[in-house]
Length: 334
Figure 1: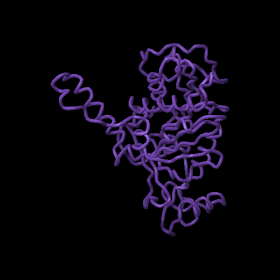
Figure 2: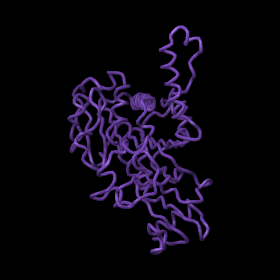
Figure 3: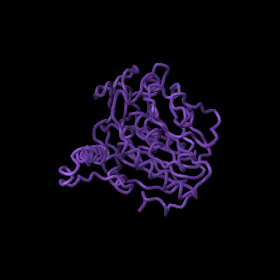
């Protein structure tokens, strides 16, 4: 899985996720919610001179651009946005220009970061490694489901054909025992690699909040069958281990929280409601007084409805962990 996704010819080295599947990160309403969260975290940190905004697994930078566009100018001028991707995106090449954001007011760049030439004026920088010592908000939207993991059955690892190929090491065996109790014929998706990746991301914060958004499950509702799935050209396909498809597995979200930070786990529908994003149908009277406005508001309600649908994106999990801030100022926690 690691080679198929991140090797020299891996899917995420060659492809852009937005070309193959739709995520919440592509929605302006989702970006608006994250912008509200940015403002909350900024208040909770006491309005620092520089506010780090980091997106791990940023694709073309769609979410960062959307969030920056939704921020008020005084706050945007203090934001230092960084997109983290496994491959060199040439500054996010392929992203439609014309965002029209105001230039940053002298916000310093992180060492080792390169500014996007296509995003000139936004200060958006690209890195292949997660920066450390952050003071702000770290985002990981549908990143953890692509962190490679192992499949196991009855104490043994499984190869891509689901044949046993060696005993579990002690750390993975302990993870399975604690987080995924299973019978001898059950297939387990060993999530220890995701726990470690998330702990490393949270550890990058000196102060602020880390947010993971992903589809997943908890211990009391683990899937009976493997969730490994492939995506290509907007369709679900059998996963291929030659780099030609995305390969994803659902996330054991309850095993993720680190002991080094406070945390909250809730579904996306609830989270977006906390942040002021709700699918409210416009009043019918508006259709007579402002037909264009009515159609626009109806389309917006439909788009938000997709983000908050209980059987779809609304069931995604939000895991928030925070350190060294005043949590009372976070509307996500109210």
